[in-house]
Length: 410
Image (cartoon, rainbow, N blue to C red):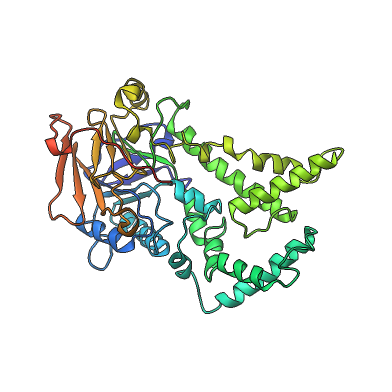
C-alpha cells in the first residue's frame, strides 16, 4: 500500500497528493469522517450513500471512498469498523473502485500507546477465552520488569492485593490483545502504518484535521513522508527502550514518558560521566513534542480551518491551495455544533465531522459526496442528500451557508 501511489479507477488516475501532482476529477467521491467505534452508524451511512448493501459488501462500483481517520477510540466497536474498512478496501479494488483510509490523530494515538480514550467495551471486543491467561502472564512479566529496574519496594512485588486489583483494572481483558493488534507487527498496526495523512482526488484535498496555511512544507508528499518517518522513529525508539528494560513494552505512552523522565533525572542527578546506555534514545523520546506527528499544526490535529476567523486565514489559504494545485479542502476532527456538514472560506473548505458516535457527541452519521463538481451532504437519518455547492455555478443553498464555531475534542 505505502509503495503504491498511483492506481486506476474507472480508467482515470487517482493520485495521492504524496506523489506531488493532481489527477483528473473522478465521477464520484464519498468522504466519511470520524467513526470512533460507531459501527452501526458507519454501516448505515455507507448503505445510505449506496457504497455497500445490506450484507456490507461493496456496491459502489468505480466510486471512491475516502475515510479521513479517527476510526478507533471512544466507541465500543473499533475492531468491527476497521475490519469492515479493510474488507471494503479489498472489494472495491476488484470493481475498479477505491478506498482511501487516512490517518487521524486517534490512529496515531493508538499506535503510540496513548490509550486514554479506549472504552472497556472496545477492549472486550479483543478478548478471547485465553485472555485471563494472557493477562496473568503479562502480570508476571511486569513484575520481572520492576525487579530489573530495581524497584524492589514496589507494592506489586510486596504482594499488595489492592495494588494488584488496580493493575488488573488498568489492564482489562483484551488489553494485551488489542495492544498487540496495533503493534508494528499486528494486523491493524501494519495496515495503519502504511497510510497517508493527506490525499488528493482531482482538485480536492482530504485529511483529518486540516492544513495550517502558515505551516512550512513544500508539498503533500513531504508531509506524508515526515509523518510516516516519525511513526517509524517512534517504533524504533520504543523497541530500543524496551530492550534496555527502560520501559515495559505494554506500557501506555504516559507511563513510558514518566519512566524515562525519572531515569533521565536520576542520571543527571548522579552526574554520570560519559553517555549512559540508551541516553540518546531517551533524549529523542523525550523530545517528541517537537514532532509534526503530535503537533497541533499537523494535518492530524489542526483545527484552525474550523475555528479561526476566516479573514485571519483566507489569504494564506488561497495561496496554499494554488501552490498545491487544489481548489477545495475536506477535513473532519472538529464536531459541527448542529451536526451538519458545513462550508467555509467561500465554499473552498468542507467540514464533515457531525459527531457520528451519538452516545458521546449526540450527533449523527454523515458523508460528503463530490460528483462532477457538485458537493452534497448525505445523512443516515435523511432519505435524500442535501446539495451544498456546485462548482460550475458557485451556487450554494442558503441553509448550508454561514460561519459556525466547532466544539473542541481531542
